[in-house]
Length: 123
Image: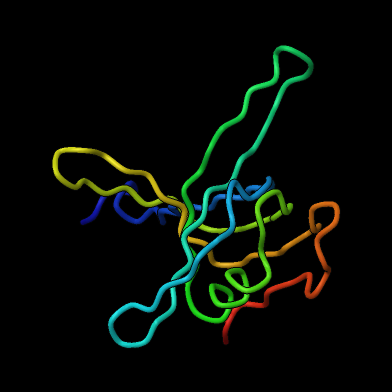
């Protein structure tokens, strides 16, 4: 007879919510099979005054959202995203990346033309 512990459901969660600013103009590229990926850096800040700290996050988004971010996103634009953390190792180095599921361009930097403010996920 199984113990009570083996019947317990597990609920693992890997969800990341970030809101910050693009570190550079995002650039998309086409992968094998025609899938578009746009990789970008996102800066998030906390603290105040001389105690402010900025963290940099490497992010990747795919499909329609990737195409639109590459077209409309620019350095300094405010972005909110929901995604998940992935880890990989290449050539003896460890990498952390955020795979984006939902992306919203929340505010264009001053002086940039406003074109579109929300990227909907593909169905």
